[in-house]
Image (cartoon, rainbow, N blue to C red; front, side, top):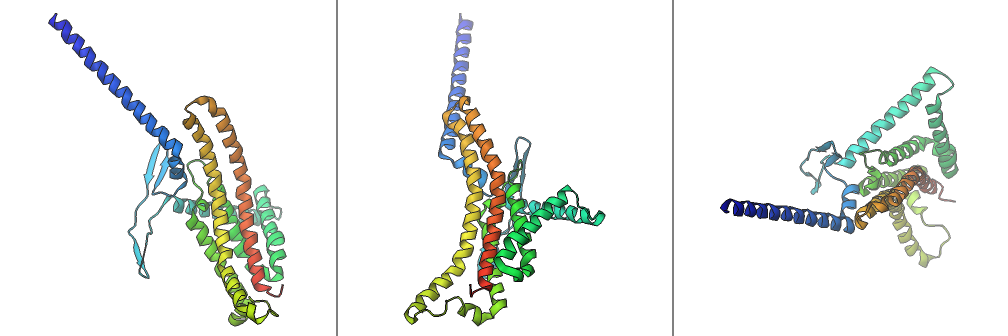
Length: 301
């Protein structure tokens, strides 16, 4: 009898442990569902980090470098995920251009890959730079070719497994916009001189009382143009990834696999659109920069 009671008590304790485990599992699942519903996991996937994730194989923790004091401002020079992606996009770009260049050395008739590169180069020259800047734009052609191909490779790189889009980082697009800002100003100063360039920002023949307002507007315009370039590229590249993750997140929000075919189908459709958007955004950033440089060197127009 005593042994029977001991067995019963053991079964009860095991049963209570099982119930406790089930309750903890349900609580954890509810917590994960709450995280899925508030979208915090989406930000975690698109934001920069100090870890390269290769689920389910593991992850690589990138080294931290202490802040460096530059002009009294602490600057964090740590290597992050987006920095690694920039390096890899740049390396792939150099390899691709090297392969295309070797194709011309072997034969006057380029291969298929070199032909595609040649089409893009001629497109940037004949449809972007020359119409926007005229013959004076040829000296800036290396910059615009580098700009177009680097943005294109960076945009497309984020579509690879385990990769991310570096142009979905506002710091990257801001750096590209700052470079464009200096190219615009240098082009105008080279054309008209320092005083002549800033004097030409205000159209001639304006009434005297309007000149102070126009001067302020034109000076602000020097900074709003690169700001628009920065935000446009950043917003368009990060938006597509957020939409894809949101569609996948519907499976967890509704808590059923019945929604999976719809979510996955629309996510694949958006993924295909991302290929087109990546190319279009590289084109838009390049042509807007070319237009702004053309405005700087052709102030009379």
